[in-house]
Image (cartoon, rainbow over all chains, first blue to last red; front, side):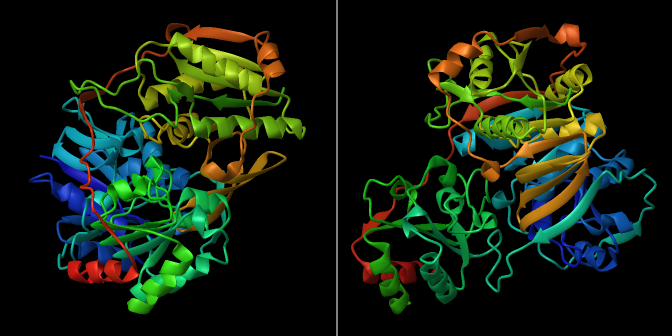
Length: 312
Length: 249
């Protein structure tokens, strides 16, 4: 039977939605026993939230002052210390998981399977490669422990309503002091979080400036949407890096994705191909974004956006 | 000597449209343009800038792969690396074994900093940097968008999902690069000529004492599910009407 350990992602007070998506992914393996590991400074409230996720059998808290910030070099030895009974060790394919999970895999001397989009069996997984332009089915020899990161856009979040047992484990691993957290500058925003928003309005290079990006924010506010950006817009300084959608930014799966002035490079499309409805507005009728858009509109965004806003 | 070790990978060029072979055995790479993985180019550029500021004396570039990967090493030498190491292997090597190879190169060269790309754009694994840092038992700073070096320490700004995180790490350490760390320079023709005279050593896995262990098997390759092409609307009113009809607004 598969025993799956999932490393919970959180900000110290709340679980990141990626954690509940990892639980959903793990639960697709029938008969799997799912344990969530919560590494925190004080994980009591986080553990209660984790224990309520449907599908979770057990929550293990690893409380330590050094866990105040998620540092891969600090967390990895703690997970490794409790990993022995598990067949699979999973984390989300977010910057948190991408940083941490390979460090765990190396310490465990196991292979890692990145960006798992489907579990076919305990040893068979599907994952995208080449920016999602090919899907590979990967098999690992039976009996090998597996570390994996979960492509969160491929899974719905597990619902609350469960009641898993909570245990605390002592942190006995020697923790390094060679890596120190200095600061996190997060853009404060009242808008929905890009990664989990049901609606996203995204802008590209055609917006022309950071000031013009404000037009996008107005439409986003009207729709209750998060704001995203193409790599070109971020590189040009129109939007912050954490808004980037695509192969090297965030992979998202909203109900509605509105791409404004985004041509639709392959690397951008890979970040949105799981969106339910894609709307593209672009002045170039040949833009590749129209190949994937459910609804396309050719025209000048500076004229169209206020019109659309007025009609909503 | 203060050395920086940079890892590069030969990959299908960023602009090539990827096609899966009809028999599902892989993607088409015959006759396709190959380049240095873009994130690795950024890694090399950063190392060169550190050296140009006087923060390092030598930049070594290394790759693991087929004989043709020497083309990418020559390009790296033309960009400005001082010497190159080619660890020859015809078989695809999994990231954990790549990390083990780089650990051997670290033991040989004693760099104070190792810079790698955050991911290769072919397999999109994003594993080798943290794996190497773990095996080396040293700090890692992944997805770096800014690097400042001081005596024995580095302050690194990282592009994380929540925004920009800053870490201070002790050296030596492993850094992986994000897109906005720098813009790599273009190679000039005279530099290509000069690069031909720079040292490029070939090593074998045997000589390094690494026996790769293939743990993963690629069973099948498929093209991704295609989205249905949608409809074009003529104006804002028609767009909003269509959105309302779909129940998404």
